Image (cartoon, rainbow, N blue to C red; front, side, top):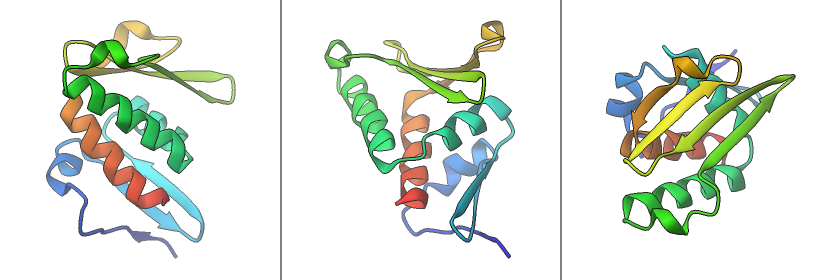
Length: 124
């Protein structure tokens, strides 16, 4: 039976704000969110290295070094579907599904950093 993961360092205020829950069952990790595209994108970052790379790029942007980010676009495949996360130079992170870019949702970059830092705790 799975359990809801609770870690000391997770930012539960941010996770609760976006209704994000991580559940770990055996070796499988599940993500539920109020926004399906955000949840899908998070769960597609399966390796510790990919999450660390994203957080590193977010830190560059937050510290005023946006121009040092080699590629602010993160495209993650789920079967034949592609989900996008884009670090914007206005301190937001856009999330959308390839077939519906009009329904892009922008999140504060600080919030995305906290969400992915919590995700890193889960997959590490």
